[in-house]
Amino acid sequence: QQYKTPHLDDTQHTNDEYERVTATERIKGAFVVLVRNSELYAMRSSMQYLEDRFNHKYNYPWIFLNEEPFTSEFIEMTQTMTKAVTHYGLVPTEHWSYPAWINQTYAEECRMAMAANDVVYGGSESYRHMCRYQSGFFFLHPLLDGLEYYWRVEPGVKFSCDIDYDPFKVMKERDLKYGFTLALEELSATVPTLWQTTVDFAKRHPQYIYPKTRPDSLFRFVSQDDGVSYNMCHFWSNFEIASMEFVRSEGYKAYFNYLDKQGGFFYERWGDAPVHSIAASLMLSRNEVHWFYDIGYKHDDFEHCPTEPHWLTYGKCYCDPGSSFDHKEGSCTNRFLEVTKKTVNDFIVTRPD
Ligand code: GDP
Ligand code: MN
Image (tube, rainbow, N blue to C red; front, side, top):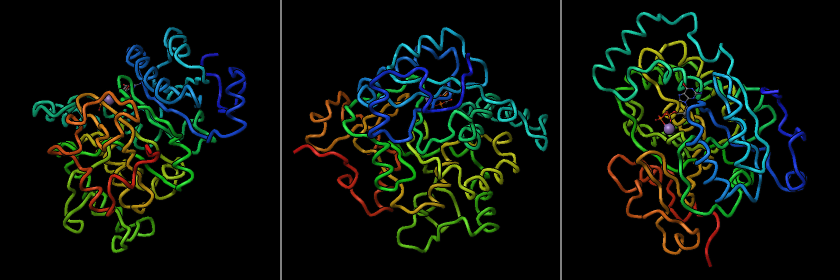
């Protein structure tokens, strides 16, 4: 009963409203959350924000994934936070363990060295399995079969404005492949060889790379010296609304497999955020990547707050525009605007009159 299966259109837990929306306008989208049982209350908090600000009108399903079985407490107490269908899936061991080519002794030495240098999560083994899973495997989970778009959610995040439109629908109507709210610089100690490995991949598989000479290339978002180095810019993947077609594409999968073989998920601490972001910047055009500017969002101490006149009142935002990270040192949103030759106005979906 716990790992009840796979179909997003499963009607077992539905109610009339769910049926009505399915039949009319809901996109094949879902919230996808990798989470631990111990994060139950932070999870309920994230759900409350999203249901309140958005999902009570749409009832998109929630999909929870975990490498350990969810407790019945976790299941019951998340079900009660939404009218929508909730699914609970177990991450298969082969997606959360060491591949044969990894030298686990060396991996442990690397963790100890990073911990000694006080790199955030540098000593954590589970964090590395998590980043690798979010980079290369989550989209293979059978609960996501048939899904066209996923909205990644984490426990303990906050949504500070009403979301009065359907972001999944915007993704589909505008043929977007990747959406973010915050963009910032990665800690370089976590990805020393990620860029060189990426360059090697691109040389071997040019067919997957969007030509960087095209005017709508996003390449310069991640490299400012024509590919010599990585500028550490990445979209913060704890919020992500993206296309399953993108992460399931041959190019993306080839990229992940190439990275995985080099071992940097274990010998360094490659995050899924730089991996997704570099893939998006090298494989998509700038018109396929959307800044969800009008979605107020906070994860830990980093917050995006829309600051355009009228938006705060229109969206009933409670965030303080002055605390938005966008204009602070280490933010990459200005760089994104520069490279895409767009302005904030290009990203406001619904406009106050
Ligand atoms: P941070 O955002 O980089 O500080 O990392 P988090 O601790 O928030 O982890 C990122 C996401 O992965 C969150 O949704 C966590 O709930 C989830 N996560 C992290 N580690 C584990 C783990 O060991 N098991 C499970 N099931 N989820 C995890
Ligand atoms: Mn987090």
